[in-house]
Length: 117
View 1 (tube, rainbow, N blue to C red):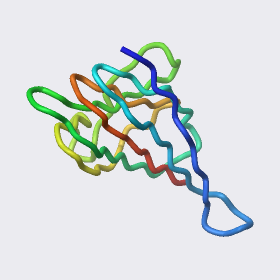
View 2: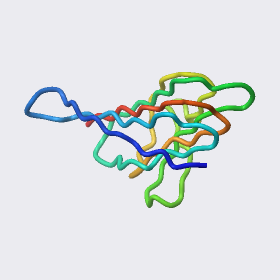
View 3: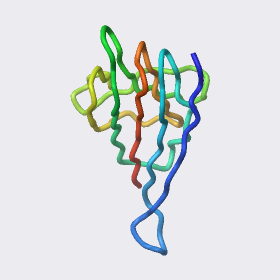
View 4: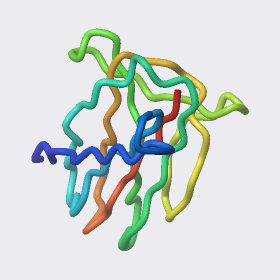
């Protein structure tokens, strides 16, 4: 298991105001965890997973934490845990100070979290 660092792009909506960002974790394999990203100021969130899941039980879980130590799965508007076993895009309802993706038995996956305030 490795911790995969993230890259944050913050293009905003115009030159004067940056009101959204995209947090990327790329090339996750095996049972990697994404480096936590601070998440507090953002109200609207969506999470996208792309890549090759491989065979068997490969999946990605989006987790949140308010202390950066204890992690819990985050949920969508239907109260379902944000778990992906194929590429997809879903809305994140839970608000946590920190977020990270956790990969289980996958290969070469990339995750992106779009956050907006």
